[in-house]
Length: 211
Figure 1 (cartoon, rainbow, N blue to C red):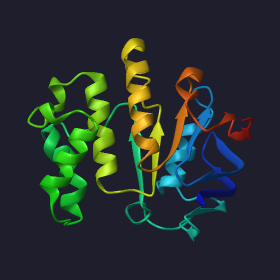
Figure 2: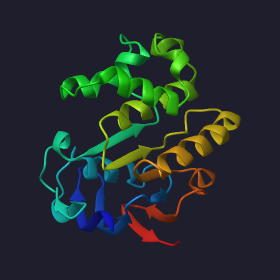
Figure 3: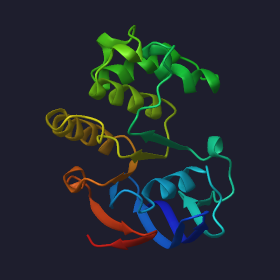
């Protein structure tokens, strides 16, 4: 079953363009896009997430056309390399934030379950400023998963983490996500894409499938 369909997507920005991008991602798949900095990877993810509206083309999520849907109604979560955690909130409240906004019940149970899954139960009362890079990324992923997205977008999720921690965290996170949701992951580090089911390369706003 197709989770995500991107069909002939074009978007012209001031000094850059996405050029006729098409690809499909299947439910439960880990799809990686590798390319150098400035190749358009982040812009593509943010367009899928609804932060930009394409000039032409279509984006479908589980068969539904979401090209013009607002971000909050797409069922998509995005995680950045710099975590974007709320600095004044402890870990518990960072994870719970999306649940509270949506007025979802049993928030405490859901937060504790995610904390156990990501092995951050002992961090729930800590502020982001006291966490390591790997711990912050686990919190960011827990927050993204809390709202049960149909698709999670990872934008260079391990780039800000030291090499040794990155290997350990990468394996742990992708093993977890494989059983939970569909993943589109962009990176400039070839090694970070090696666990993907399929890989594409992006250069100068164009996408080429090669695995």
